[in-house]
Image (cartoon, rainbow, N blue to C red; front, top):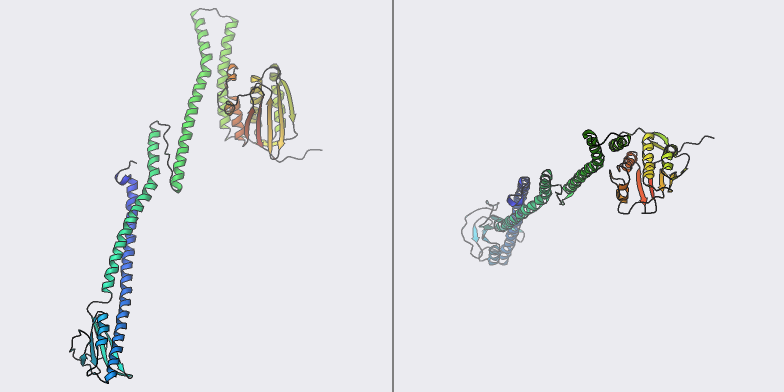
Length: 456
């Protein structure tokens, strides 16, 4: 989505057009309602004012009549002044409807019009009374319809306000549209770059509500994909490294035999056999890791005593541990029930013990501890071996990872990764604690099942 006109892409322009149409419709409707409402309100108000002015002129004419007890020579100047102030012409008629004069500037001679309501929206009439008797009437004739002047002024202000409101609405619509579409445009651009091979491409934007969450989720997804791809490359490189040495040794030995450079001998054939075993071990470890990862969705759970699992596995591995010159010890609570796959737990504990046998020095001690901690079942494999460097400790459970000291020992670096996958498949956690030169402790924590009552 490339920014175009107004700094917006196609979606942004459509959204802006929709917002503008809504704004124009709203402003037009409100303006029309305001014009009608203000016009009618002013018209009613001005009619009331004009009627009030007519009543005032009628009272003034009645007072003039009373002073001389007749219309002949009556001073109607005050009534004329009231009419003039109201912007109207004054006409005064007697009880018979004959014109008797007018105020200042008022034309004379209107003929007989009676005392009934006068026609026309600009004519207002009121009866003149003197001493409680109707003696005539006054008429105020306005040259403009009620509310015309004030309405024109009000409509001008409403029109200006409508234009300003429309401009503000358009600007606000543009700002909101840009804020909504900018993360989408950034994600589109990042997705295209990511697809083209740029694994560092990220949206890197924030936005309101769900759009901001979408941008964050996109960046997290891209980060995960990039990390997974890097891990895949690392695994490929590590596997290639592990396979390269035995393959090269096998190739060289077989070529020597093929070319007749050496005679077949039990010692030479044993070396080639050892290299083939090493290849088979790496392939087996990879298959084991793949199976362990698959176990996260296929674990056959049953009620298992973790103490018995650890004790049996220690008994199986004890010859290997003692052959490595290690002192073996075990401390087990009875029972420590868990719902788990017994075979997988045997595999995880066995990998920890095999790891200790491989890396500990002759004379080191290996202790297996199983205990309950609240609602958790805990297995600890503690050794007094050479330990792990602080900068290497966070990587001990990574696939095919081997520390600096471990590179001098045969192995694929998969055992602890397999143990981690098994433990995670059971909803547990595994952690390593170590200090270089002071031994290592690997701890497995699993959810504990309610303990069954012991038999008497």
